[in-house]
Length: 314
Ligand code: ATP
Image 1: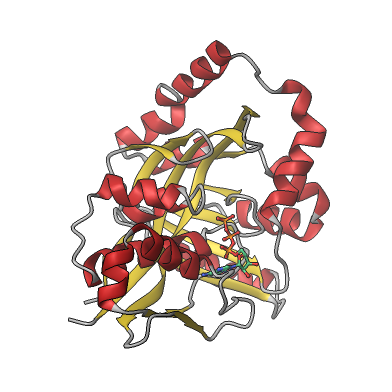
Image 2: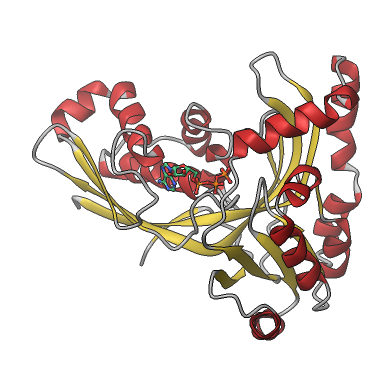
């Protein structure tokens, strides 16, 4: 087959703690990541000519070499030059459902889909670990997006420990269409405001990384108890993003008052999510929030937790 269509899931962070600085300029993080079934469709197709093309109908997504999906294909062609020369180029079509600049890893999951898609298109037979290692060269969230499900992520987010997957929870996602938050800005501002509290010794960092394994969020996931997961939600970046973007803070407060299992901002925002124990509860919260905040700029999605990242679109 000369074409593969893949579904690429968005992720939310159930837990995000910033614990220190790294020599490479990134932050040391402790996170719990979760895939949700709000997905882009990414199609990879062999081209007769030796080039990489990206087609995407979303106005905020570049179609040039700055697109993370393009960079994933360029990495694969550099990594496997003989296969690229033999197979010819590739056309990547991205049908966007995941909002852009939303803290839901939209670009990262598109890149992960291209890695998986080219592995299949070029019959490379790469292992999941090899795909994750290639993904880490493209961005911190890409390795998680390849596999998906539920995972503890440490380092800059690329060191993964997969947990027993959750699929019995739902989420209402809310984002103002016209609002996006720059991820580098959020982390730099956090460093300016809270850098003094960073742990700098390696024993201290190790201890903090280990603490999440025995912490309440991981226990709640092991118990598969939605109420406990809702109570354990945590995101350090809220401290800088909510004060800079009062609309996001207000959105979070409104969502919290609806009575789901818990509400939080995902990643660097500005998407806010509320957990629900059923699709019905999530849909009811969606209706309520529409009534309370009748802003046409506000976009809402109901999604389910899923145990996979990139999967074939059957
Ligand atoms: P993260 O949660 O990993 O920080 P995000 O969800 O906040 O990411 P993205 O949707 O990945 O953010 O988009 C961030 C920027 O990357 C946008 O400015 C967008 O123009 C650019 N970009 C490059 N490639 C893509 C892609 N394939 N899909 C979406 N955005 C892309």
